[in-house]
Image 1 (spheres, helix red, strand yellow):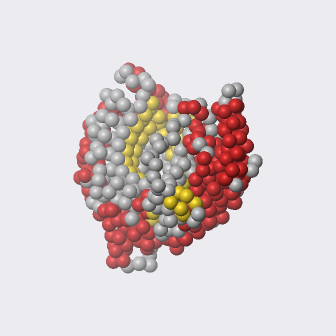
Image 2 (cartoon, helix red, strand yellow; image 1 turned 120 degrees about the vertical axis):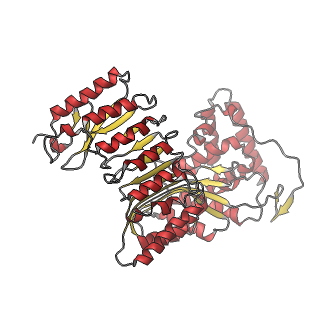
Length: 511
C-alpha cells in the first residue's frame, strides 16, 4: 500500500509540475484536486504528504462534492490552526452527512492521546461572516499559487515512536478544540444540524468547547435556554441581545448566566414586564440579583436597555454596578424619575460616551439642569445624541443649548417628536453651526406647522418654515449640513420626513 501511495503521489507531482508551464494557478489547483478525489482511498492516504497549499482547494472540492470520508480524514490532518467551515456553508443548504463527516473527523482527533506534529487544528469556525477571504485566496482566486505563505520552517529532527503500529512525530500535549458559532435562540429554530452539534459537544464537553461571540435570544422557553447555555463557554460571549417578553422572575433565572459572560462588550435587553404575582420584597430581590451581575462585566462598553418596567427609581442601582466607562448608553422607552436623570449625570460611566440615546423617555417634568450636566460630562467624546419623543419643551431646550454647543465631536443629533417652536429651532441652529463635525440633524416639525391641537399639519406652512432654516444654514456658511424635519403621523405613528418636500405616509395620500 505504501508503494502504491508513493507511486500515486509521484504521478500527481509529475502532473503538477508539467501543467505548471502552461496552466493558470487556479486551474492547476482544480485539476490536482480532481485527480486526488477520483480515488478517495488514495486521496486519504496521500494527505500525509500533501503540500498545505493544496489542502484548502481540495477541502472545498470534497465539501462541494460531498466526499464524506475525505472530509473526515482532512479534518484530522488539517495543517492550519483554524478551519473556517462557516464561510463554505453560507448561501447553501448544508448536507447533513457532510456536516457530520466534519464533526466525526473532530471525534477521531479528540479520542487520540497525542496528535502528530503536523496536525494543527485548534478552531472549527462555523460562523458564516468570518474569514471571508480564506478560501478564495488559497484557491488561487485572489493570489498566485506562488505567493502563498511558505510552510513553517522545518523543526529539528526528533526521534519518532510507534503508536499502534504507526510512527508519529514528537508528541504534543492535547488542548481542547474550539467550535465557534453565532447563536440565535428562538422557538423551533433548532434544526437537525444544530442538534447534532449540541450532542457532540455534550458528549465531549471537556475537549470540545462551544464558543459563541454573538448570542441572540428571542422567544424560547427558559428551560431550553438554560440547557443550551450550559454547553456554551459563557466567557466567550462578547455580544448579547435578549429581545424577549420576560417577566422579572424569568430575568432572575437568567441572571447567573449573564454574570458568567465576563468578556461581554455589548448588551441589549428589552421588554421586561412586571409580574403581579410577586411581593414587593421579592421584586427587589430579583432586581438586585440582576443588577449585581454587572459587577462581573468588566469589559462592557455598550449597554442598550429598552422597555424595562422596573428601571424608574433604580437606574443608579444598575449603573453603580457597571465598573468601567461606557462608550454607548441607550435607555429607551423606559420611565425615569428626575432622580434617575440626576444620578445619570453624576455617574462616572458617562464621561466617555460616544453614543447616548434617551429616545422615548418622557422628560417633560424633568428639570433641564441634570440633562445639561449630562451633556457637559460627555461633551468631549459624544458623537451621536438621540432625544426623540422625550417631550422636551422650548424652555428646556433653551437651557441645553450652551451644553450642546460644547459637544465638539457631535456628528448626529436627533430630537424628533418634541414640541419645539421655530424660534427655538433657529436659536438651536445658531448654537450648532460651529460644530464642524456635525453633519445630520433630525428636528421635529415646528409647532407653527400644525393647524389644530389634533396634530393636523399645514404642509404649505411647514415647507415655508423648512425653507427658512435652509436659508439660514446657507447664510451661516453650512449649506451641506443636513437638517431633516421628521414627525410621527398622528394616525399610524409612522415617521414622515421633510427635505424639503414631505415624504408622506399613506395616511396623507388622497383616496
